[in-house]
Image (cartoon, rainbow, N blue to C red; front, side, top):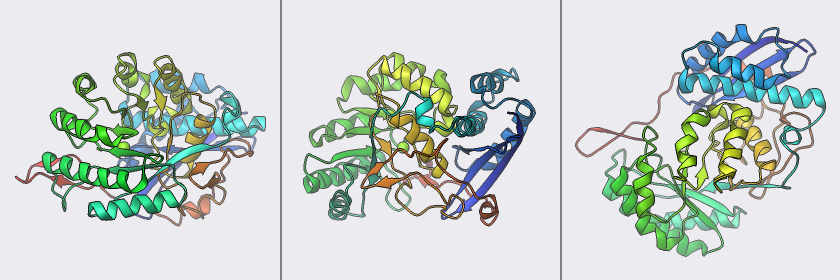
Length: 377
Ligand SMILES: [Mg+2]
């Protein structure tokens, strides 16, 4: 089998773009991948185009050989944009391999280790009372894990205010759902180290399942200081590409849950390596999944075949998303993803439908401090 074409589909749906990558072969089997760096989709299109000459004519079954060639082929590391493009290609190759062998991808990753994959949904509201009601509704809908976020006030994020608000909302939710629903909180890198420590200490008595991404990712060493002061479990890593960027967090045990994003880290090939490395430090994986049906499927296959799995980000799972572009998606029921029996990723892609959702130029939300300066969204 030989790769004959690599196509990119930057599409807009709902409120955002998705960059889908299709790898075609001379045997009529195709594979689908997804690019994970939101708001940089056109850079992803260019990165994939740069990689195409290394792909055409190659046997798509030689996944590791292709991975190493794309990663090291051009001397200069391409950074996270490059890795997100490489991730999309890698996931597509696993899809092809599964289809060629007549097996779901999880069977190629070790087999069906669990029967279903627990996901977390989201909760939140404008007041603690609304947040509590939201958590109660979500728990009644079947979610066993829920996550809310540290919030701004109408576009202004002052860290000390945000910490106080977050604690009030989290406490109200815990009171509402009791101890049996796991509650998480995503800081979305909005705090610095002292405010993270303040948040973590205040939240301890409400037993969070994890605190996610309190700090930006440039200096993982700062998690050492957080670890000295906060006993809540930490979930970190959704912005990271390759095992090399996870290295310090794993080896120094600076996190409890690895937020691997398969569409950034280097695909299923690299995600599998990071997950196995985490296993040697009793770190569980909580794959990041804010993207579309390809990302969700890739996460499912890794989760099904990985023992050190924590919980899966639900993201858009369970919502109606891109149903014309992906007429077949992975099954979801009552807060759990279910492993499909179909070969490959278990999804079907409609190229014509994709062309009906043209790309739109977008940027992320911009938050500010009270003095007008920029702060992280
Ligand atoms: Mg996050």
